[in-house]
Image 1 (cartoon, rainbow, N blue to C red):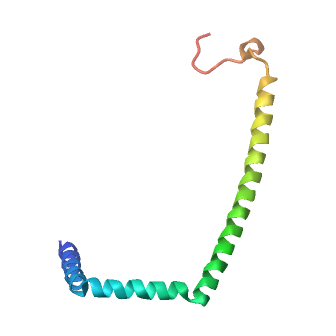
Image 2: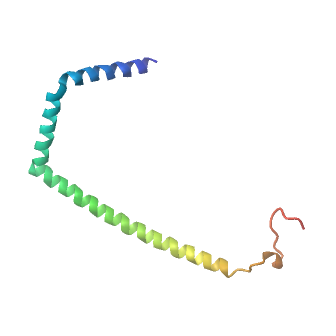
Image 3: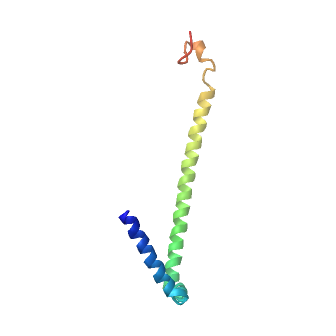
Length: 101
């Protein structure tokens, strides 16, 4: 209960402080974000991050495609081997569990 009260009190203080800051502070933050976005160094960093993300996505796609292809060929081999098995296991003396004699 003590933590709940502390959380609610902190929320109330933050809400009141934010409400008093009002539109002026919001406009300051928007202006600061726009200035940072227009900075050439920030644009270079964003481009570098985008290039790294694109490369990582390409590598993950290639890896996944290779694993998928390997899994499909493995599944194909298993299905193929199941098709060539004897269709009537009871003819070879095999019994299923729980079946009466």
